[in-house]
Image (cartoon, rainbow over all chains, first blue to last red; front, side, top):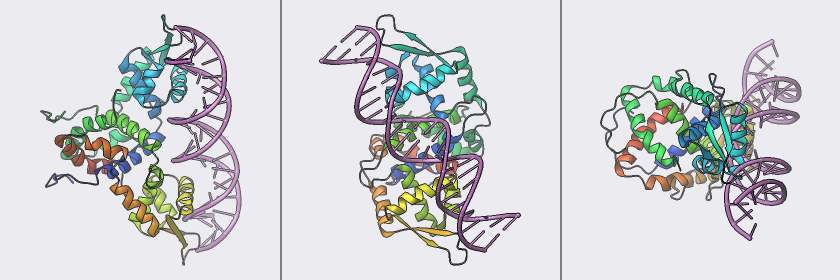
Length: 149
Length: 149
DNA sequence: TATTGTTATACTCTATAACTATA
DNA sequence: TATAGTTATAGAGTATAACAATA
């Protein structure tokens, strides 16, 4: 696993990736973060709000690749916890613009430095070759995920 | 992205991986396979039954990293579609042993050669460096997922 | 008593359809 | 009429707790 000989293109990459991503996600989904109290769904939305600055709900839904009604509920939870705030757009009063609060940014920072998260622990057990392979693949995975939007 | 200079260990690997895995999984979860009619959850369970041979429900739950009651429902669906069969253990009648049927194996094979699946399409758009990085990381991801069990 | 698996119940996340408010 | 977002409703997938059957 650490030193594969060839890098001929394999044909089973897509189905293997599908299964492994589903399996990791299943374990993550159950893991409500002890420090932040945020599920992966909430954390993902919060990170995207933070990244896109004041953002409309529609744009956020597109970036997160979910339908607007799904996001309405997610955002309501974030708002209820005081992690994002919304302001009605001055020019078009149908539109709300979302941004992270100070507390939201604090939790985001916390989530990025957590040492005891499930994946952080498992990553710590990788050897240097494995870690390097993972880090090289991360941008590729982000591309496959359609990051941004 | 294609030719990173150094491979110093980064500290943001775990949170980035968490977000990207969650995002890909979200898109996959919604994707019921056109060819097989199987969700990722059903496909994952089916693949594991096939891999572990005649397997008890408890062992399957452990391998899939879900609780037994969750698996009871998943297996019921697979059984209803004729993809797995169960046989009561001869020595311990509390135990059922599951295995894939001919039809189950046929769908598994089909799922492994699908060219139009969401990930297969996106992977086709990667350049050779990106593809190589992804393939090198796949065993690492499988290790992180705790494959097998 | 202990173990294997099921049933009952509830929660999260997501979707589509119908609606409201604004443009 | 068209668009941004919400409400109503439904379904998949997962969990925990309580139960039944067997050991």
